[in-house]
Every structure is written in C-alpha cells, then in structure tokens.
Length: 402
Figure 1 (spheres, rainbow, N blue to C red):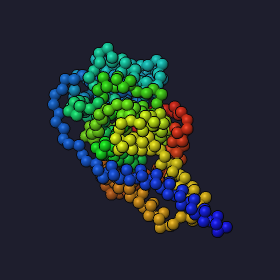
Figure 2: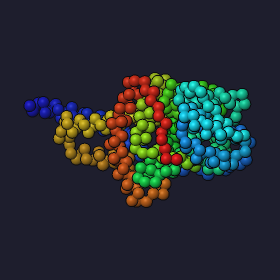
Figure 3: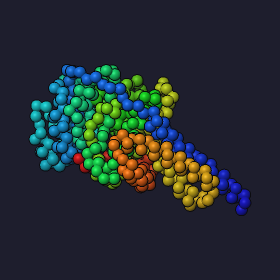
C-alpha cells in the first residue's frame, strides 16, 4: 500500500507538472506581450488616388443595413463597395439588392461554396478584369470611421506592407457585463497581437478590418476554401512559404458588434479552436522546416496549439479532484493558481483601463471572465480534439447585437 501510494504521488506530481507547464507557458506569453505593448507612432495622412474596393461577405446578416451608412460616408473618393451575398432568405436578398448604386455592387452567389473563404475568392476573381491596387476586408457589422480608408492606404504604402491589420473595437451593443467582458477581452488580444508582431514572434491575420495589396492576395492563391479559419490559414501559409510583411495598428480601427450572448460566443469558439489546430496540422511540418526565425516558429506554433489549454485545464481539475485527491503540495498548487491568475488578469486589467472602464467594471469583467472560462473549457476542449483528430467543417455566422 505504501509503495503504491509513493508511485501514485510520483505519477500525480509528474502529471501536475506537465499540465501546469502548458498553462504557465501560455500565461507567460500573454503577460510578456501585454508588458511589451507600445502604442503605434503617429500617422501622417495625405491625399491618395489609389483605387480601393471594400469586400463585405454577407449571409442573412441584417447588420449590413446598419453598417452601409458608415461605409458610404467614408472620405475616400476612389473607392467602391462589393457585397458578396450568400444569403438564403429571399426577402433579405431582395432588400439587400435595393442598395445597389454607383458605389455599391451586390453580388449574389447562387451556389455558395467554401463559406467565407469562397465568398472572398469569388470577389477577388470578379475584380480581376479591373483590378484595384488595394482591397479591404470588413464584416457585415463593421462601421468604420470616415477616415478609415485614408489611414489604411497611408499605412500600407508607408510601411510597404502586404497587409495592415486594424482593430475591431466591439463597442456596438457592449452594454452589460457580457458586452464589457467581450470588448475588454478582444482589446487584450489585439494588444498582445501587436506586441507579438513587434517582438518578432510572427503574427496572423484575424479575419477582417484589414487592407491588402490585391496582387499579393492573388499571388498567394487567395483563401483556402477547405478551411473554417481562412484568416489564420492564409497568414500561416504565407509565412511558411514566403516572406509577407504584416503590420498591426491599433489606431486603425472599426466599430464592431458584440455577439448576442454566451451561446453565440460558444459557437464561435468551436469554429476557432477546431479550425486553428486543423490548419496547423496541415502546415506544421513545413513550418518546422522553414527558414523562419525560432521566435516566429514559436509564435505560430503557440497560436496553432492555442486550444490545448482547455483540455489541460480540464484534465488538471478532473484528475486532481477524482483520481489523485490530496496528493499535491498545497502551497505549490496555491502559488501556481495565484500566479496564473495574475499573469492572465493583469493584461486584462490594463486593456480594460485603455477602454475606459473603472475599478468596479474591471472587477466584474475579471469575475465574469473566470466564470466564462469554466463554461468555455469543455466546449473548447471538444473543439480542439475535434480539429486535432478529425476534419471539422462546422461554420455558423455569429449572431450579433448590431
């Protein structure tokens, strides 16, 4: 009995160290990026004649009707809007078609293939006969400020980038605890993304609010229509097989709508976590063999394996509650829990302050975030394992408050 107990303690401690190593690694990265975040330098914007087309994929999403006035108010003469519509509701299709004008083209795909990636590729192909210099990808709920295009074009030209990624400020429908939590969380993530880029850990395109060089997107072959996270797949593929220049700017932003609630967030999480690891599986071997710097490989690998935190978290609590009860050093366990709380909490506090939230609101955000993580963990763990072992194709348009 004594020998079994000693062996059990050894196994429990080794398992504890392995699981905590995963969680501490990601927490340290998160803390490092928050610590090293620096605001972008001021931008000088001048007149620019280069043609720009705004691409907006839509599928039965009424947010587009609230966003169109902002799109039409953009202060950039040489621009037009191409809405790629995959909607199935005839009344929605008819209503959307009524918004056609000299500046707005509505292209309805009778047979939509490839989800959002397919819609974007179809729009790139449609533009080929009269190709613009730049294309901007926005979601249906995005409402850019009047100077968005002028700033985006100035940034991509001044930095000679292939893509400049802006911030989606989820400030539409952000009232209430869930909205504040979602907005603060996205700001935390974007600030970390910018610092990740600045420190050389490579970076990834996050889906929208970005300007691209049209010819670069075409050379890359567009978006992977088999992927359910086409933004991440493009960034990973581009960096593994080439040397793209991505620029991250928090001062290039659009207003965006918060999901309708926790259920919409969970469905969104299933796609993200399963898609990230599925695309990473596809490119992992070329990534290891590529000429990228070690930091870049670490950054891209950490993103591809992001979902591993969920099963590690679940395994930790389940194993040490039911399998190895009372087998771990209490002080060490407590210290690690406090450390993880600080490493994840401080970046959120910093980003929440940047969004103008006060102490009570920040306390609510942290408490709600802890609750959401416990709810999210089983879903994210399932999605990660699904993407690791299968070929998920689940796609659901996130219902939003805007």
